[in-house]
Amino acid sequence: MTYPIICGALLIILALVLFYTGKIILDLRRKNKELKISQQRAEQQAKLKQEFISTLSHELRTPLYGMMGLTRLIVEEHPELKSNRNLRSLKFSGDYLLSLINNILQVNYINYEELILAKTSFNLKDTVSNLVNSFSYATENSDNTLDFKFDESIPEQLESDPAILTQILMNLISNALRFSKNGIVLFTVDTIKDDATSCTISFNIRFDGSEVSKEDEDSIYEEFTNIETEKRSYLGTGLNSTIVKSLATALDSEIIKQDSSFSGSEYAFAVTFKKASQHTEQSIAEKTVTSNKLRALVVDDNKLNLLVADKILSSENFDCTTIDNGYDAIDLVRENSYDIILMDINMPKLNGIGTTKRIREFDQATPIIALTAVDVTQLNRQIIQAGLNDYILKPYDKNHLLELINKNIENTKS
Image (cartoon, rainbow, N blue to C red; front, side, top):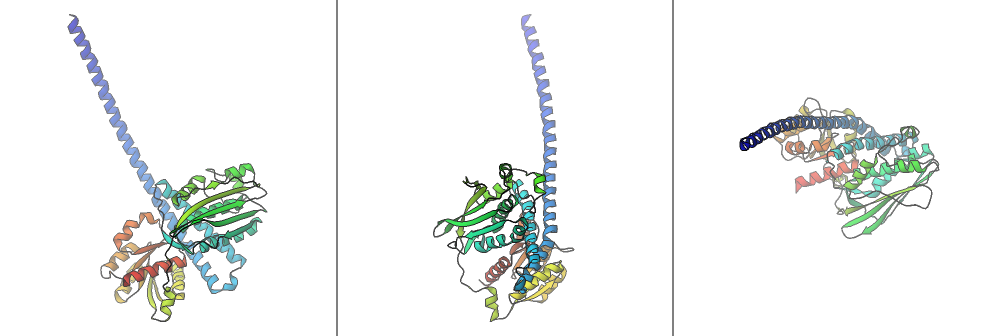
């Protein structure tokens, strides 16, 4: 009698176990389904965010490119206006707006682990000198002094990502100026180590503003700064610590707060740069002075951008043709021979990707460089598939553009 009772009890227990196990499995399946739906929604939201930032970048960069380009051309054509107060103000505003736009993009890259370090040959002294000069108007308005010392033994050409380096320095310097009044900001660039292939350089920003309190000093690289304090500042809010640190990490560096004996603050970081090979070949302009002009086609739907590009290339002895749409560009390439084509990506009706694809159906040789104000990480695959040879992000530096043009023209000859 006992045995059947035990067996029955075990069966009941087993049935209950199976029942609750089944219920748990159903609950897990339901929760997994809900989790999958939530994940899909999150991925969709992330995609929409990336698309929004890409669109925002383009909408901001396009007019900024025209403004900065025209400012540079005015200074080049009228050297006597180089120290003009209004022009310096305009240049500072353009440089700072560009930094803020880059900051927005870097937030997007960092969130999605897409921060890619570019390897570009650049002149470090020119880069940091231009950066310091862009703060001249700001220092006048804050009654601060920005002193700059550069180690002349640093090689002329280095390889790294000048855009990321500039962003870090711009935010360190702007923060130093923001938290100073009637003070001195000292920015020094020195060599730490120099060998045959690389050079390690330190960047140091020290400031001793009379209004730097301990609270302000500690808040400079906190996640958020006090909004009421920022309302007093001409320079805005700058970057938070997470982003600045991530940018420094991309350069394999770290921003360190130095222990200083004076009243104030001191921040430093060091970067190891690869030495760029020294090119002894002539520039495009030098080559074309004694030979036939190189022919360039610039395709862009923005008239102001066409004007800036035309001015830059014409000053380098190019025979430049400009057109504002992809369809006419295709006809021009079919009927004429060009040494280089500069192609805007975002154009109505037929964009730069589509225009390039159609050109490549009958012309595989002419190098085509994409001019884009869009997040390049989203375009890399499309650029390669379309047959574009290279790209440059607006607003671009004149020397960088000419370097890309020179490289791609030389590649077609080799």
